[in-house]
Image 1 (cartoon, rainbow over the protein chains, first blue to last red):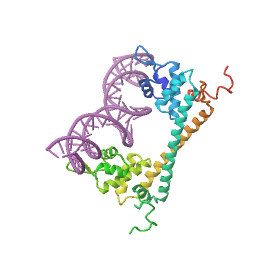
Image 2 (cartoon, rainbow over the protein chains, first blue to last red):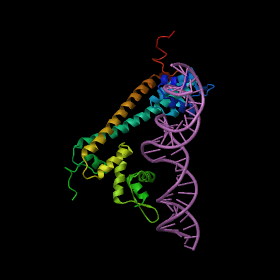
Image 3 (cartoon, protein in one colour):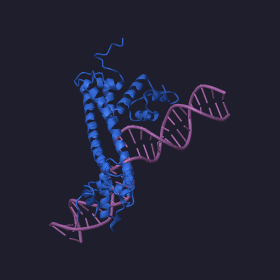
Image 4 (cartoon, rainbow over the protein chains, first blue to last red):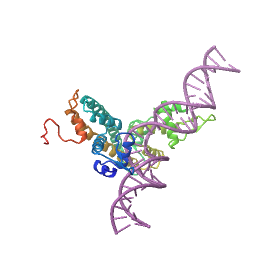
Length: 139
Length: 139
DNA sequence: TGCGGGGTTCCAGTGAGGGTAAGGTCAAGG
DNA sequence: CCTTGACCTTACCCTCACTGGAACCCCGCA
């Protein structure tokens, strides 16, 4: 199978597949005209990679998972460890994003969003506390 | 003020501050010995940038926000628009991450995580449906 | 023979900096 | 006067996971 067909079947782009070959994740054969020739096993690997990437695993994780996938004597604990570490990172990211979201929502709620220049969002970003309308004068 | 002091005060690294100068976000003066000299106004800008970046705004957004910050005749609606767009992106990311989290949690829950090779996580990644223990035989 | 639609390699760029090298500058201490 | 150590400077490549483009080759079909 040529790279275009593989791309369609795996929902990866040809460019991405070439990149995966570059970094050693797949090793397709070559035809006499230098075209890459993908076997069923290559297709399986690429499908695996596409799913793992879609679940947010890094390429390094994918490489490790692929190795485990091909190792009949693997311990499932190794797979689970990678997965749990990844889950923790996902959780940390969600927490970060939720904190940003809360702060920004709060600031945006205070902002009139009209033609006037007064803007609590900018005040918040510049480090001012409270808002200018009801904070005690600093005089 | 020299770059080291600014770094301490803004919690940005010197390297980051130099980068911000490179891309035109701040324009510190230069001393006779070529050292950067930061004014109070530069410090304000960098503080603003640090906060905006911490809230996840892209550098491009930061540039726009900084321009609005310095424009006394700005409309707060412009600030709010940028903020709301950013909020939407944050929400989308959270949704994505939560979906990954749900899938991975489900797979990890099924995985024994012991010395045995059987692994529902790898099966899920390879595209197999259900699990091998209670799915109907494919024979 | 020409054309369209594959394929190939190689080079550069993305975002937002990080790492490191090689060197200039400055204040304090011996 | 000289050295030491902390600070500053520029300049270059590295990150991650690709993406885009240029320039070229190959294959089937009218």
